[in-house]
Amino acid sequence: MTVRVGFFPHNNSLFVLRHTGILERRLPDVTWVDLRALPQGDRPDPRSGLPSVHSDQLFADGGYDVIGTGFTPPITALGAGRDVVYLGVSGPRTENGRLVVPADSPIRQVADLRGRRVGIAHGSWQTTLLLFALDQTGLTWADVEPVNTGADAAQLFLDGRIDAWTGSYPDLDRVEARTGVRTLVRTEGLFSHPSLWFTRRDFAETHRAELAAIVESLQESDRWITDNPRAAAQYFVDDAVARGEDADLDAWERALRNRPFGVNPVDDTFLEEQQRAADLLTANGLLPRAVNVRDAVLPWVNDLVAGTLPARA
Image (cartoon, rainbow, N blue to C red; front, side):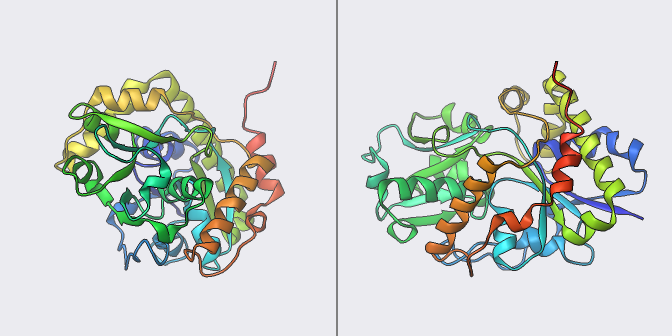
């Protein structure tokens, strides 16, 4: 059968795997689905809900069977009643992003964000980071004006059209090269911000061999990225140039060098963090119903992933 794998640059592991040919050696009949080319549907106002495009396409004809994203989309899927299963999770990516304001901003602490415009890629890990930061200070989602910035985030920040921004590298490189910024909240100490991968329960249960091939290929490709970060960075630069966008090879190489690679089984620490995020999203009106993230765990999938990790000496 043809296995459909959804990819986009924000999940660095799957994006590189798309270009290396490693998966095709184990799974010749694979179709790569560029998530950026799929219909995006309606994107809800950040004050009233979460976009569900990732989970919608996971269950749609012409969509995909496996996807890699950031922290928030599987929670969104569970909130929409989708029967998803965690495939694996990366190590913490706390160096990848932070909540920043201009260096001369009067905003000195998270409490000062009340009534301010805060830029996020809504539905991504940035939504969770902002929500965790607000909750830590005693604020709620309703106390700020979240702005779904999309690809224009860095420029909106530089132009002063947002007051604060949950930025990530390499976009932060572009901003820091042009202006001073002050870090309001670091990701480290707030939440782990991992990459993760998930699938449908029916696909996991009926295509175990294909799932194993995907995990094994991700592990091999991630080891290659770790050993060859500049060559891996070139894939991202080439993609951006082909789309008429600017990209800096050095910035991408720095970003990849600072990110953890490798797929790990989901553990209690990760699940507790996902559950806390799910509960906060529900309490702030961003999920239509409460969810139990442990419903998305299949023990044998965890065993499968654990079996692909290097043996400890």
